[in-house]
Length: 244
Ligand code: NDP
Image (cartoon, rainbow, N blue to C red; front, side):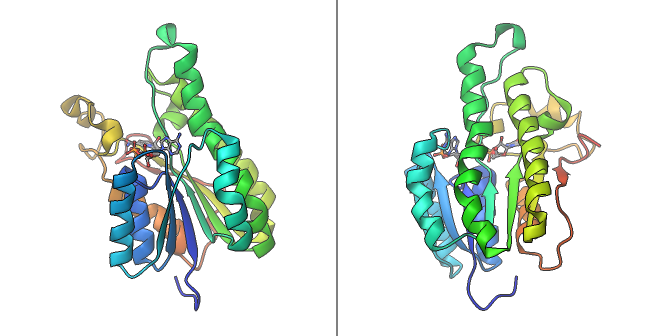
């Protein structure tokens, strides 16, 4: 990235896993960071220190992305004053269960966080980004949203919904010089996948291993920092060949 003023990146869900790696990677690319999370205060403070060690500023903001009023209260005034150049919508949860056993609570929790959260955040920041006539939006979906996965109907629905929403948004804002893309990770080593049967899953992946958060962050960084950008409205898999 080359710019006289440091640009700001809003990393939604930046306290752990892929979001943490993305905050650090974007800081290395020269962004100041607004790092959001829900409740992992200590983890967020550790990421803030890592960003600051790289010579960039970092502000931590705790709020629940599924709560529209909380998102507005945390972000509206801030983005009107300083529109972010890059927004990475990365926060997400799983509540896995076979469809036949899935409860309404499990369905709602995932849709409200993973899909409604994308709407809540993006709709809050979009107007100020449009006024700037530049920027990048990256939504973190999942291979489950591309192919479906047994036990993840709620999660796959939310992540597929996000792909549809991001592509529609891309069609609306491309003329304003805002590139919108989706990154769809496969199975990545984070808290979210800590309990998974590693041997069994490795056997399904052509690269025969889980991905790292840094490998996903590298792609997000490219989409946010590369100057020469004509990638727009795309879904980029980072999955070791799990889906192709
Ligand atoms: P983690 O569980 O490690 O981290 C999730 C992040 O999202 C945390 O910062 C968490 O904050 C935040 N978050 C969760 N719920 C909320 C909420 N309601 N409001 C605000 N923030 C919230 O996730 P990963 O790094 O594994 O995954 C990141 C993204 O990548 C997710 O969208 C996930 O669906 C997707 N993904 C992950 C894959 C994997 O294999 N790990 C595979 C495919 C996609 P806090 O720390 O406060 O809880």
